[in-house]
Length: 285
Image 1: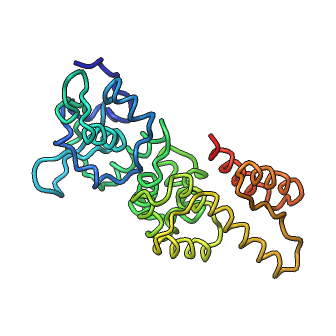
Image 2: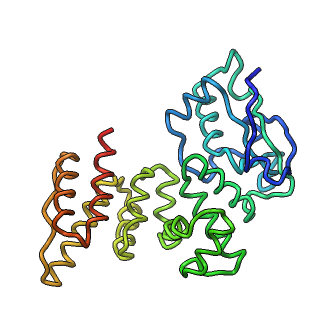
């Protein structure tokens, strides 16, 4: 029916797992999958070539026999979307097309090993903030280390086969109010906006952002950047230091140029300005 896909690590990690075929109805309902929505390119690729192999484990949390995709959550959401619009792959409804999978009977949806494998798979492709934060949290708990210390980050990094810098960045997510992650899950904010919030160093500012999200506001990365600049200007004003340049404008390109120009003058905040400028430029793509 479909071309044979090569199955690579971490799908066959330690040569453990049984090859099976499943259909969408046997997968944990997508509303329970903790990941962001698939982008148009992923949906288009699956519509054309179908689904690369996924890694699953038994899911006994809901009625009936289901398999939880440890690696492949976004792919399953893409299939669910195609099914919702009545898409057929080579004449077969998306709900009935077999999906190649590797079954790990030894794992559960919320085990430390499942999060670790998902983390490693994500880093072979693109990060998944929700799953990756869970991987850091559960690994730290399993090792009984504090991820907010240098030693703790190093221990978690060794277990996840990544760098302490990556772990440190993800650890910021553990400090963010659950409201913010829930807003991301529900599509109220985009991944770029979530990243901008995670990069905010001011905890009070993040709490204020959470309040705005609770009130139903739909914020963009530009809103977060503007909020951060306002907070920084107020801090500089109270410290009687030169304020950063006013770069607020309806045109993202004008804002980006203003931030880059400011970075040449204010070296202490250059990195943050450059990150915000990059986000603004990306919004034009």
